[in-house]
Image 1 (cartoon, helix red, strand yellow):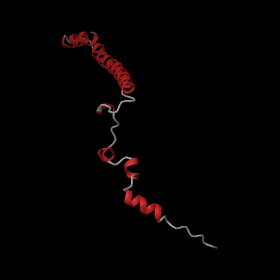
Image 2: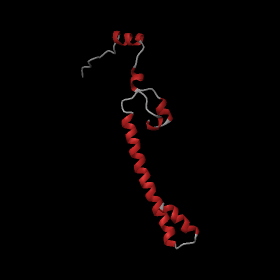
Image 3: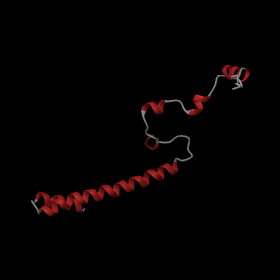
Image 4: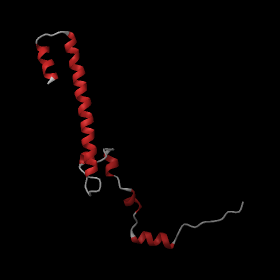
Length: 98
């Protein structure tokens, strides 16, 4: 609406005040769209909160390396043989007399 009419007046070589108004209108549109998109993103997050899979657009961006790294649970996991060895031969504690 308003931006289109301002563009028409721009072609018709209108006053400088009208040309300056274009920037203000564009910024207002951007502000509105930003708020609208943020609201939609929040609603989508709530919709996918307890689901098994989340759309890629809602996943944390981070870095490629971090996304591919093992999770804390995967890192902590032990092969049964190693777990048995660790439980059978724990690291020894020595009391040092000063």
